[in-house]
Length: 267
Image (cartoon, rainbow, N blue to C red; front, side):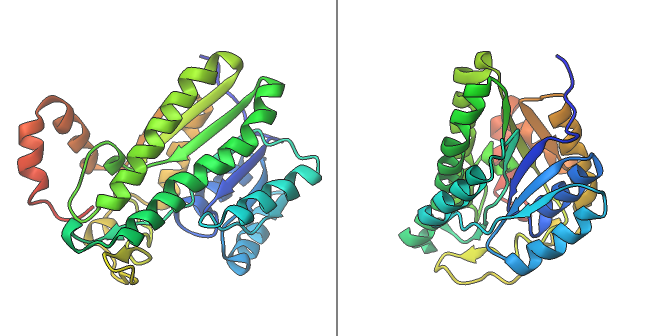
C-alpha cells in the first residue's frame, strides 16, 4: 500500500482546541498541511491557529458545535463557499462520561450519541460526496479502546464509540474501491483532560482527572503515531501503553478480560 503525504493537503479536524485534536493540528502543521480547525471554543482555536501559522501553512478557524445540526450545516457551507476541497476529515471532537448505568439518565445517553456519533456522521455525510466525486479522500474517526469493548462507568461513551466504529467500517467496505480511505483511531490512556470535561450520570461536569490518564502516553507522541498510521493508510490505529493489552485479552481470552475489567482502575 502506497504512503500518502499531507503537504499542501486540506485537513479538517474537529475538537481541535485541546487534547488529541490540538496535538494533531500541530503535527499536521509541521507536515505542511493546510488546516480547518473546529470546536465550540473560538478563542482557544485562534491560539492554536497562531501556533500552526508559524509553520507557514494556511489555517481556517471554523467554530462548530457537534451537538447542533444547524452549526454543522453552517460550518460545511462556509467551507464549501471558499471552494476548499477537504482531503482529510478527522472526526475527533467528542466528550466522555463517568457514571454507573443505573445512575445515568436518558438525556446523557442521547447527548453522548449526538456529539460522539451523530455529529460525526452528519459532517462526514456532507464532506463525503465531494471526495467520491474526486475519487480521493480520507475519513478518520477517533474512537477509543472502549469502542472495542464495554468498560465500567463508560456505558454511553463506549456505546457511542462502538457506533462510530460500525459506521466507519461500513463506509470503508462500501467506498474504498471508489478511492476513499477510512481510518479508525483507538486511543488508550492519553494525557489529556477528557475525564475532567466528562459528564456524570446526571449530566453534571465530572471535574476530576483520572489517575490512569495522568500516567498515560504523552499527547504529542500520540499525535505523531496517529499521523504515521494515516500516512500508511491504516484502517485501524492503536495508540497507548500497556492498556492496549486489554484488546488482545478481550479477543483471545474473554472470560479473563471480564474478570479483569470488573476490578480495573478507570481508563
